Amino acid sequence: MGVKAEILVNNYGISQEFAQNLLDFFNGDVDKVIRIMESSDKDITVLKGKFIASRRNLYGAYVLFYNHQTLSPDYVYVVCTTDMNLSRIRIEDPWEAYIEMLRNYQLASESDPDLASRIEAQILSKDNVSVLTGYFSDRANPDLINLKRFFTNEVNRVIYDANVLVKFVLEDADIFRTRAYLSNTHDGLKVISSNPANLVLMNLKIEPVLSPLGGKDAESLASMEEVYVRVLDEREIVPELVEKLKPADVLSPNIIVGKVLENQLMPASENRRITLLFAPGIFGTFVIGGKVRVQTKAPSQTTQKSFDEGKKASDAPVIFSLNFDAEGNPIASSEENTRSIVSNSSPLTEAKNRPSVSSAIIVGIVGIAVLTLLILVFSFFLY
Image (tube, rainbow, N blue to C red; front, side, top):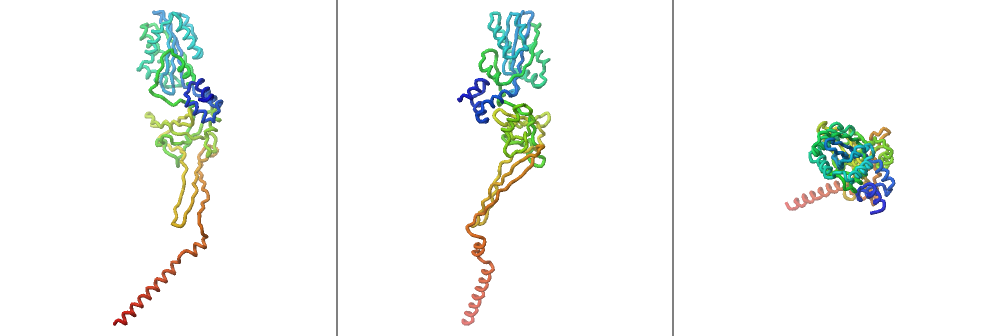
């Protein structure tokens, strides 16, 4: 593993293969890769909370990672103690500092690691994973009321104290820092997701380029088929990324081509949810009606004609390119290279060497007449 790939692996917790793919795509520019990584989507919601069980004189704090890429929780970490100072911990602090404070209380003699482990197992039980997914399904507006009720009930199921008071806040985090933390920690309970997803650096905001008179129905787009889309994302790094991804045959800015990764039917609306892959870790998703026609990138075609024996033609490929006007609308254009017919003789020579059809007919008629005359003369002398 090279030094550049090692930097990415150690700092962001990604695999060696993924790090090398990124470096290859960006021509070994590790600074540009790091800028992309730092601009990546914050697909992890970190829930930081604490609780008090007054009857048992118990104080607790917890952290939960919810992954919006896999649509499931990744991790939970709970600390239980009789030290009331834990109730004064600031849940508003950044999640890394918050976890470090929890670890200090866990190592103290007043902590109860067995009870904390039981609460962790209860929170991430098989039935509760789908429940948590439902509460986090609306990423912009998670169900805070039911989340509070959930943690109150689940803690109570373990400690049997009806007087449980729960408080928590949410924080967004990028997947690379949480992955790096999870790969190095032995605290808490980790979840192996049954719904693995591609590691997403960025999920670009895009819309398809429509083609009412051509293109292809959205519902019939096949896997890895190439589709033209318009980038609507306004993040600082995006223009530089678009310039790298833009095909040579596209003149309009913000138009790039992506390969279909998923084409899913949305039963509630009968629309199609289409996910495109642009580069390692760079994705984009749009929703569109199944019968709406979108502009696809057709493979290059080669036109070839056959001629009679003695004549051969060599046709260069007909190159079709797709350009866009200033408003981003597709303009189809074609350019055909000059055709050349290879011949060893000039047209005059070919005309001279070509047999005359009329002369052959005359010679045939004369021959038949002479033969008929000879037969008649021979017959006359016999009789």
